Length: 241
Ligand SMILES: NC(=O)c1ccc[n+]([C@@H]2O[C@H](COP(=O)([O-])OP(=O)(O)OC[C@H]3O[C@@H](n4cnc5c(N)ncnc54)[C@H](OP(=O)(O)O)[C@@H]3O)[C@@H](O)[C@H]2O)c1
Image (cartoon, rainbow, N blue to C red; front, side, top):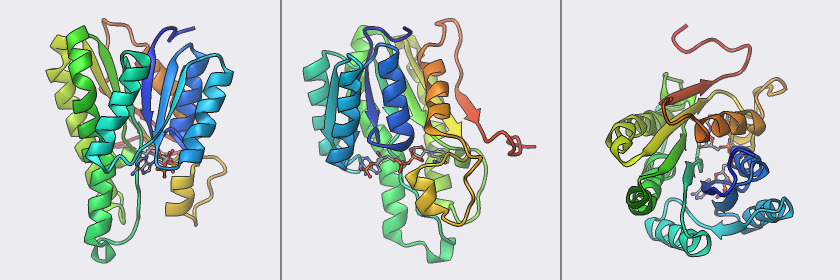
């Protein structure tokens, strides 16, 4: 097992990609704290993790609320002792033409996709810096690397997350903390079913495909790093292609 004895906090772990990461990490021996707003979903995922023989925490939390993030991190540390791996995965998407986008939708997208990770990272950093060890994986998107019409807020938030990732990869290297972004293309989840109901998703990636990429980053050799890992649908066009 690749993550025996490790302890991870996964935001947005109640379904979709976050659930896939939680179960894949647990399979590799990791204890997992699962956070999202829907209590029934985080409880269900935590139950499966426990059934796999790992410790699990179900943490109802709104990532758009900085005080709730502080409480989430405090509770995880109180239960697990430390957080070795933070996965910033909670995400919000509302796709529409820019001229129809409301200020509230813009703000919610930035709050969940960019400011949420800011607060989560700041909350876990004191422990990681003291131990001079840790790994932070931000679930970004190909929308963080290229323009996509009708996705202005989402693209802006994910471009910001990629920028934050690369600066922190440099700033936190002296503390032994690795910071990475995964930029997935289309994955069949509730988010894409709701934001793009018209698209056929029969050949889209699954949460398990992204969990596999996440496991790769979480277990990288200390001599190597990957800043942005792009994982796209097999028949899609390469970024920049
Ligand atoms: N699906 C794709 O094609 C795709 C592609 C690239 C990147 N991504 C990224 O992957 C991540 C996961 O998305 P997904 O596709 O797996 O979507 P999903 O199935 O809808 O899952 C999103 C998760 O985030 C949680 N979440 C949303 N808003 C939250 C908030 N304010 N506070 C706490 N948790 C919140 C949701 O739980 P609650 O609603 O219960 O809070 C849920 O657990 C997102 O960052 C997304 O941008 C997805």
